[in-house]
Amino acid sequence: MPHTITIKERRGRPGHVYYPLQLSLVSKPTPGPKQLLVKIEAAALNHRDLFIRQNLYPDISFKAPLLCDGAGVVVEEGASCSSNLLGRRVILTPCRGWKDSLSGPESWSNFNTIGGVGPDHTIGTAQTYALVDEKEVEAAPDHLTAVESAALPAAGLTAWRALMVKSGNAKSGHNILITGIGGGVALQILQFATALGCNVFVTSGCGEKIAKATQLGAVGGVIYKDEEWNKKLVEKLPAERPYLDAVIDGAGGDIVVKSIPLLKPGGVVSSYGMTLAPVMDWPMQAVFKNIELKGSTLGSRTEFSDMVKFVEAKQIRPIISRTVRGLDKLEEIEGLFEDLKAGRQFGKLVIEV
Image 1 (tube, helix red, strand yellow):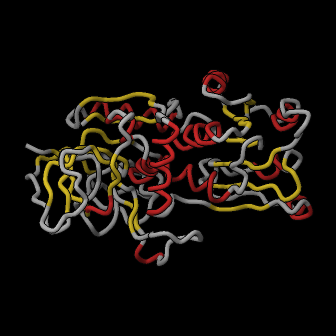
Image 2: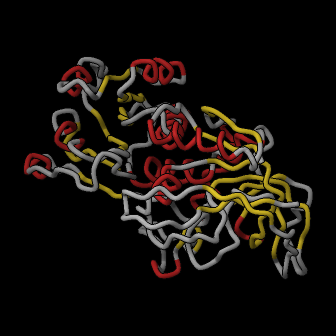
Image 3: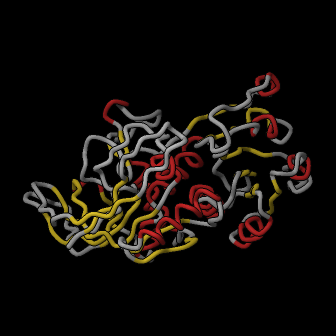
């Protein structure tokens, strides 16, 4: 019988509650017109899933399957389908309602993510079968495994928009700083940037993660726990281009303050998250230097397609930190959440369904 993982409701204030996981038996769904029935092979965790369990994410659902990242095989097609994907491995889009606008969703009221949220209680990737509109999948690149395909959607899309669309500096020879290397988005940015010929520098609280990043193509990195990490980074910049063109950041906090001496005039801080705090410092020195701060979150359907094509063309493989086999292994899946909570991962955490 098919299974699904949801969260179980319990009382508690946002940030102080931690909703337990719940495994349920469900019936196998039947696709309607222009729908695909996807047998999920793998599903991946994101920080949003941790926030959902802590009641720190909007529009939480206790009925919708968790997780927005997943890949699987199309096993049935509904009437009037024209995608010709029957029998193919596909990657599910992690969000809906954003077609192609560069500035943001065409209508915020129609934009939503999948997995553990929203009024549609059927869409999420922590389940055996998922019913999706045929327009909300991309054929998985042939070089990717099921686990690698599942690791790509939200992290890849977020990385793509933050680097390729918002930074304006995804160019060969440009110096890019990626903060907090080790998470799925940061590593995807590293892979995209190095594939383009950028000089990539990273920060981390762990020297081992910096060493792994250099093995993946980073020029070097610094420990952000060092109060003067920005001064140490200056010493690593190339003599012919002794400044940063852009910072791609998912932490927030004092990143702008620390980056001012490093960034060129008119340099860009592309922010896709604030894991340290929900606010960022913005000093007058940044204004004098014409530094631009650009917010970035997920991306459009067109950007998702462009990202998948780039991954295929460059033969990029998402980095996997650890996997658990089986939706019914709730205790082991809890271990993945603990890795995420503690920041132990280097790459994506994935459930092999």
